[in-house]
Length: 216
Image 1 (cartoon, rainbow, N blue to C red):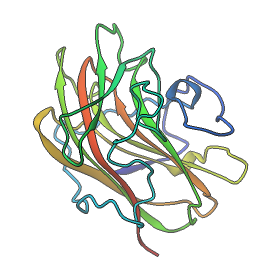
Image 2 (cartoon, rainbow, N blue to C red):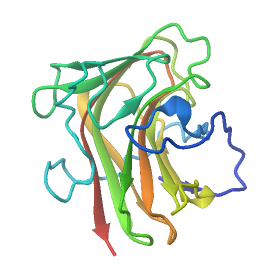
Image 3 (cartoon, helix red, strand yellow):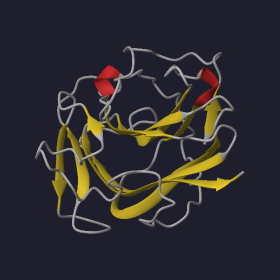
């Protein structure tokens, strides 16, 4: 996990925030994560619990009332990937699958699953966690991978440049593995965008997402 300051060279490809409803990656600010270490050190995260302390809705991806393949309460970009709830679950009955195929540049046209969380306490420490599996459909490298991106937003809905956190470069795995990051919300943060991002041709399965406060 590391903080990205405004001096870091980043790629911004989109505009604005939706006023309400699930957020779609295609309508959000896009940041190209910097190249991670070749063997990133896993962050020890708390086991998944679906309780009142978990601030994410539909955190084990069980519901899809509109049958669009994206779990209720979450946003995705169907132009960049195929989304579906599948029975290969770590928790409950379903997991969220993202499948990317034949993208010439999967970094610029990455896929993501997002949820906006309001009521964040500025200055407080939080932890994001997820159980994941994923497989490559093309040759891997350090920048074409999977991970977490967290954006912090102020009261006006603006992105806080020093409030972006990333854990990136997770290894491919055919067994469920839990990864995550911890961060301190900026003092002027009132909401977060939690994003699980895939920028490689292949398939990812996500289950047991969590966001919880872990200290003052």
